[in-house]
Image 1 (cartoon, rainbow, N blue to C red):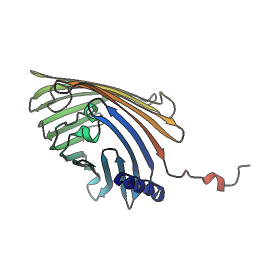
Image 2: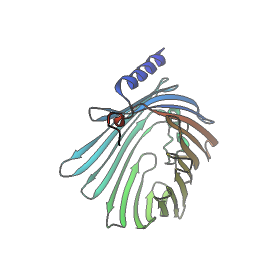
Image 3: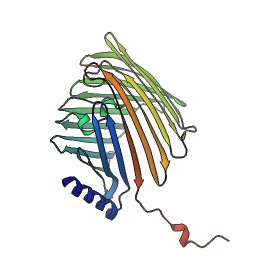
Image 4: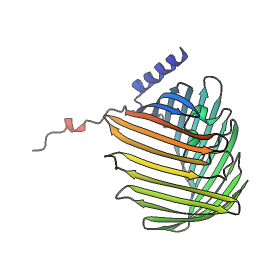
Length: 305
């Protein structure tokens, strides 16, 4: 009864308030079970951007806003939260902005239920998740453009595995080279990587290595835009990171989206392995339906002779 009331309220909001889109999704993972969800995203209200969802496990919501800081630069804040029906909450705050020539990002999160209870596919995400059943985490990073072709990065994380890193990026036409150092709890190594971007073909690729006396990590990704038709995207990634203490050792996935009727159909397949949980895999199928009425200016204009 509660779920029906929340779903009716969500659909009413989307119809009356002019929400940007409706999201429908169905997920299943061998280690996380099934999840059905419908949500509203990108709803603008008084300068804020809102989102909300209801699923077979719980409800979630988000709010974000951009700010102009006089004399400093621009900033953006995003707050998200989720509640499970059977007990369990999670929340996060993400801040990003510029202070003069420096771009800063800050993140804070807390939860008292395992992340794969909220999303059964989260354990195999491209960005390594913290899979503890409860905890808190803080992240901070800074980027400074030393010149047109050189960018310096530094940051760190506090949580299950405290780490810090410094990284320099060297850009040369379509290629970007990276070299740096990562140190912290159970990790110490030199990192190196290369990225490739071709704006004309929509191809992006990246490969990164972390190596040290007792540290090893390897990750890569390939993305293509338009390969499955206009407006489509395709991304494949893989990461082998045994140095991470609270994430899957091996993670891999492939994500695709294509235009289907008035909306976008997406398919997300992921899998991986760790000593604790063994081998697992999952898949999500989703559909995003825009709700904004298309502009019809051409009908009011006189025909061109």
